[in-house]
Image 1: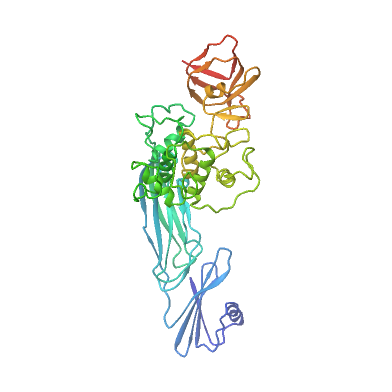
Image 2: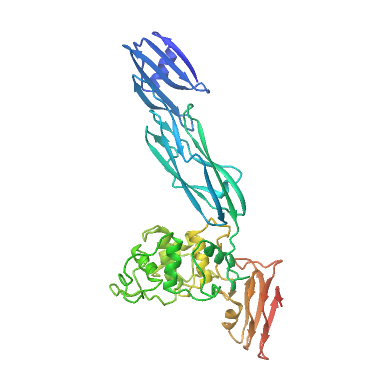
Length: 467
């Protein structure tokens, strides 16, 4: 920083500079101008009647000058403190998260302008800034602002990065907050999901402590989700805890068990009002959840609101704009939680399986994990525009007397297929996620294919049958 002192009668060009800054210095006994390394005016000190006035100028990212502060009698000091100055996040399973609040304080006597915060470093994609209310803000003396930094390792190994906090002031400059952490692979799994098409999604919610399975070391991926189970899934995924209200505070048909705190919390958060008419006080905890109901629950939980914008043009053929859950299903698609059930449909009245539930939860609440959210439909089998979770369930729906094609994605099925109907089937595997291509790919099935009806015909293409 350079300074230049001028007595009365200083040069006209400097007077013009001060006029542009809304301050004209005249009749002063002395004037001192201060410049930064780019030869930009950053300060003026002038004395009149033995009283010194201090003007401080700063520049934004595009070079616009502003008067950041003014003092009479004593010069201002500019200083910033950051807490913490570094943070070790420790070791986390891949896909899990840890957060740290960063507080920036103005410990000087003059105001300063913060630049935009940024995460930089070799592993910056494992860290993200959340809730930033510091960037591009003017911080007054003794003022504070905060930003939340989230660490979520996307792969195993040590991770490093830093949060850069830059101030538009040459006396402060940039302060870096270094972060460290490491990722580990979660070993949680269930005996009945090995090779299952939704295995990674199920492991994701298990590693995030959302599920412990259905008992006996299993997850039961093809079982339907009940409304009671759904309450647990959603409340835990939201980071909430169960309600402390008495078990029958809001509904008369729920028991005093492990589910009632989560059902009651759903009510308290406005996610559900029950299953009956207004005032019925019923929740129907043992009923299976339909996909249309799930859309309402998921969107209300993610947005924590029931008022939101959505596209008025239907995304799915079977969900017209007058459907009772239309806006929620539209928003589910817009949020990337679902791509439908195949063939341009959503299958709103279909029941939600525990495998599908894992995908919904991962896509809605854990999109930063190493498991990619689905970009098309959730189920791996497609027949005549309808999606299925197993080959057998699709085969059972095939019509007799016509040739029916069943398409399977390039995943591994663990099931036995029994061909026992007078139907002609072409079973083709290896398809990509949206069933548009199967070039060069195969589908594997670990199980037996048994034919028990003489007139039945099945042609199998692009399949590998494991013993």
